[in-house]
Length: 230
Image 1 (tube, one colour):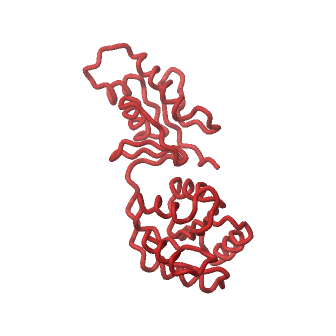
Image 2: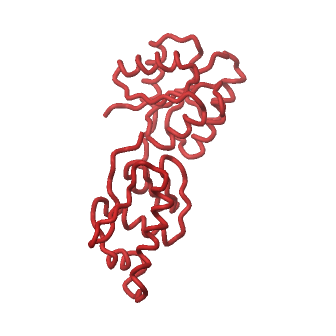
Image 3: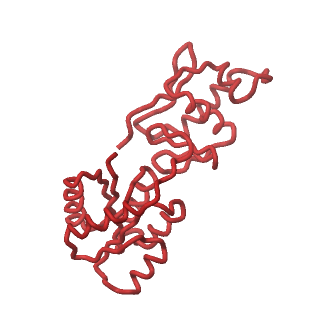
């Protein structure tokens, strides 16, 4: 299985050199040029190792690291810095960095430090919940995210989405959705399903070119698995 590396580096030339060299070594690589973009990529995808510059626009590397470690104590993070100061290194290590690479660096050193970090990293736990494309539902926290962005759902909206996501690419009738969400003893109007589907669409799909919730005329609704968004 190919290891995936995230590079968060605002100097595009350095980022591109790292990307090309690491891809040549057989790694899959994603790059971000700001702290915010790096954090967003980290939340959207799974990486085996992160190369994180200290001096970044929008949010510096220490703050990015702090937020990464708040939810993920395991993924190795190697800090990139042009400042070879003990204070910076201590701060990064205290926040949970695994290692430091000082610029300018030789690629052989980068390769060796990545190999070492991957060797000593604990296996990543499976991400809880259901992921379909960029849509992720976590039943433990009852949180739903799309593209790493939290979507606020009511309890009933969440339950409806959970039923749909548990049956991807499968048409579910209004009666099936009523039974799964409202229960067998519900004797109200079946149009309540249409109303809540409309609420869900507004929160999940509105403003996106890729839409997950599909109407199958005369049959019901389905959550259609789509190719990942860019």
